[in-house]
Length: 384
Image 1: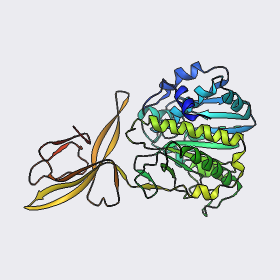
Image 2: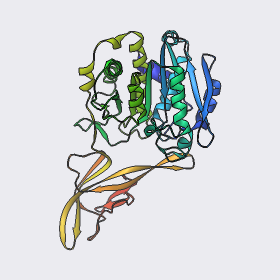
Image 3: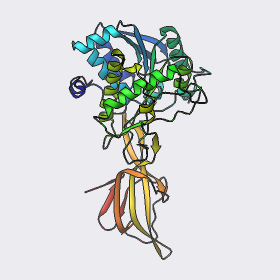
Image 4: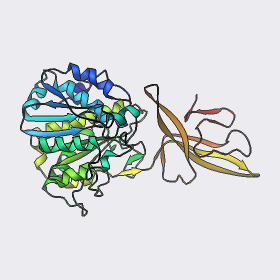
């Protein structure tokens, strides 16, 4: 199977960037062909529709939901790429239709998606609400789970750009987790099936993003929906879409998530997931939060007549402005950066900050400044 050809041919061109809301997906949902059943399965706090898309007639039932956190949209884009592929006349797509029944919620948290926030309109993290079920969106997710009775669950998220794949300077472009079902983090038959699917996806992804796949922390928290569903006896997989070099819109990562969906389905359809892959799974390096978006090394400062060299770092803040996401770089750490990496790293080799004495980078200030005579940093980046 040529994953490159499929992903290039079936990218949903009407979705791009980080800001994805109901108004972006509704025109696409309306145009899905008769292979797809689109329905409104509930309403958000602000009475926005929560859509579900059902596809296929097969015996293996997979439940997929995205944008439980409203500002995590990469997996949603990849879902619509998957829909585009499944709506085609491709022979493999036809076989998948016969093998699987997919029930997908593209945007579980439409209020959070519109506001570009992690939480819903009541400031509740839906991924900490699996026990209380205090929110309408949480109740919808659980009621569909109870009614659909899936064989597998795919819990679809984005993760911050801070993560490396293990003790390396490789970003964790995609991370997975087979959540724990108990405090002991035991591996039973249910979790084993999730582990085997992840191992199969990782094997494929290594051809595209070698050493850039991570494993999320498996500490048990029954308030998290993945842990809950795993404990209820349904193999559940957490997908985390992360950073790829120079890809802050996460279009390359989107492709990797799409490939992950496809490789999971292919492996499951061929029963490749029956072999115990526990060792392969735990050999995937664990996520390590050691990245900043920008690191500025060996910058000279002169304070009270004393000269020293410092290293400091900045992160992008994602700000919703005029229905688009603007990235604003802000200084987040000064010194104490041993063992950390930057997605952009600049070494100024002893040049003076702001080319002035008694000037120092300030925490939480905008990352726009001058170093030496000619090095102008604008919104984090060195202007050439």
